[in-house]
Length: 149
Image (tube, rainbow, N blue to C red):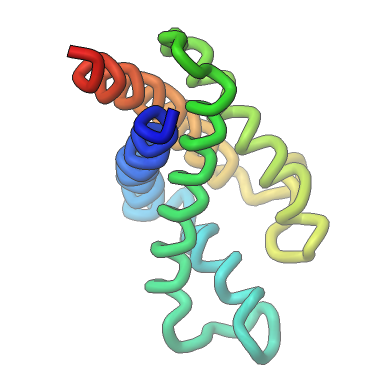
């Protein structure tokens, strides 16, 4: 079980890297001027919630990978000894997006809810979370298969 949970964390970190590539592409084409993980980190650092702060980019990246790894571990715990399909991962990624960006992130006043956000960000974030979920399941299944052989 420890190996499966570890594989979930590693898969979550890899999936977060893939999702981050989608988010960076969205930023480069002008759909998302600020990265949400950076904005979330900014809100937790001392000082005014919406003012840029030193270290927020690094803290945002580190906590984003940590959150992705934790979500990967949770999926591995729920799917113990089963090979979840990629479609389950896509649904899981979208569920994380909805709970975060229609739930606790706007509740804390960090970003507006999906329904009131700037036009490009929700599309990029939804696509990123689809990629996260698909890569998570593929990585976890691959790591678990390799551990069993």
